[in-house]
Image 1 (cartoon, rainbow, N blue to C red):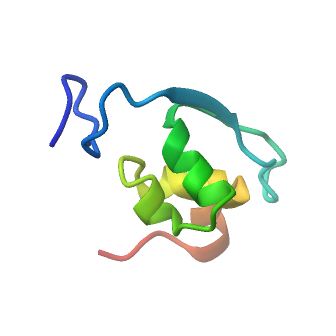
Image 2 (spheres, rainbow, N blue to C red; image 1 turned 90 degrees about the vertical axis):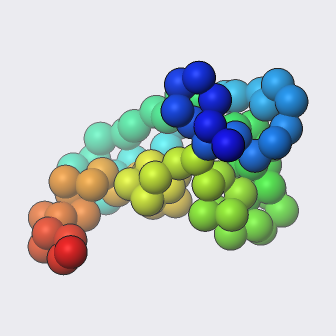
Amino acid sequence: MEDDEGVASRGRAEEPAMMVTCPPCRVCGNQSVLDGVDALGYLEWSTLGKEIQNALPQLDADQRELLISGTHAHCWAALFGPEEE
């Protein structure tokens, strides 16, 4: 199910969202902030150990990597090359 903004909903009413400061990127040193992160999903991942893709399914792989390691998509590509299709 998707809401009016195209974000996948997990069936919870009024999901509280939060702003999360990500760890600094080990490649470029810059730090990112993600806004609108599902607060309950973030708690399930960061505190309760739920796999991030299951706790925060509305985030894409690049956003999840930002939360995990702080690594930006372009920095990841610089380290490991472009993603193969």
